[in-house]
Image (cartoon, rainbow, N blue to C red):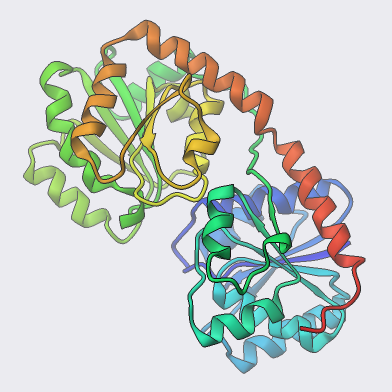
Length: 373
């Protein structure tokens, strides 16, 4: 099949759905499909996709409004010229731009891969969305329930396909990784390290973690927090960290091309999101064999279980502090939970399983009768 991925994420931003597209594009390319990835010109998203797999064709676009004629024309021309079988879109903007271009072309099918609930109970959403999307993919039952609650997206058009990520040989407890990570960030060798990975936005709940840290440090003074990511709240969080006197205990490491080494050298993963349809960062922690402290929200309870994670209420710094402290003070429990996390990752979240299911979905959509809205 000829497949186009379209994602209009802002130029400097790279998050979970961008990583999903990178993985899917490369995985489907390995299976013999012709893949193009479209995004904003000069975006971090396109840079990472191109850097990770040079065989993928990139389509840089100038993207502005949701119905911008020039962008729709450019996409339409590309779909017709390349005889694209399916376009996989992400944001509402992508669904409208790519969906209208596909309907105009008359042949290309549209698959909406939803990573966050972007549905609204409005006339434009109710009328346009079901006419543009031939199929919808979500990573969790929780998100499926959210996007179908308004009634205009049919339940049977939505397929739940959990995210899978490639395995890695760099695992938690790796002595070299532990030493390298602590050396890289100027931390003592006996530091107990908690990693949090995610964009600095309200959704990820860094502020609640920041409020929890002083309480945890009271009984665990050798605990340090390594935050991986970037985003609009970065300066605010950095200033707040300084104000609370935590600049030595909280390291803001920026957005890294790979999180494997920091996770391999860590002792636990903390994920304090207030909204999380799935949680790729949690999955990355499980892959590394780390015990998890996370919010009981969205799709996270579908990813973890009680044997590998301590789940706490969202927006609750006190409970978050208690969960972190419980693991910080129990080496054997961390090892036991980390081992189960690794086993759960291997049994349920293999990337090949995700490739199989998405490929099957695309095949069914492409060979279905044309969408007449």
